[in-house]
Image (tube, rainbow, N blue to C red):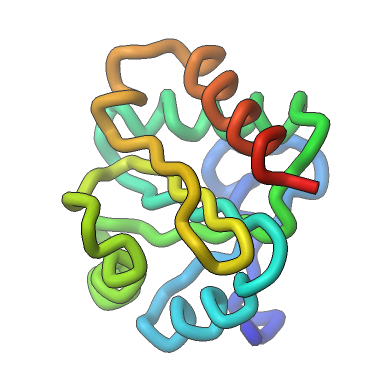
Length: 143
């Protein structure tokens, strides 16, 4: 379990001010291990964040999805690809069959990857389209 010091209002820090959307920012491989162990039940969204232009669409899309979804993930997690290399590498081991892609979204249901949105499905689209994809995944796999 992550300590309170490891939880941040990632949403506020990254322009996602949709209410009380608290994100666990995974800074180390141990953080990833603890968070993914906790993610063995329910729905978990992991954002692999980046500084690329597509990251703006990703952040806006996830904000819209969380504001408008009828079902929301139980857990909101993020790793920052260019900054937290150890954490990002450890997270990628959970999606080893998928090539590295940032920004990207991974949706886990009861610890299993059930949906993935890579960079190429974010960068050429508007935030509403990205949000629609995420909302559809939340509705399909959420409870």
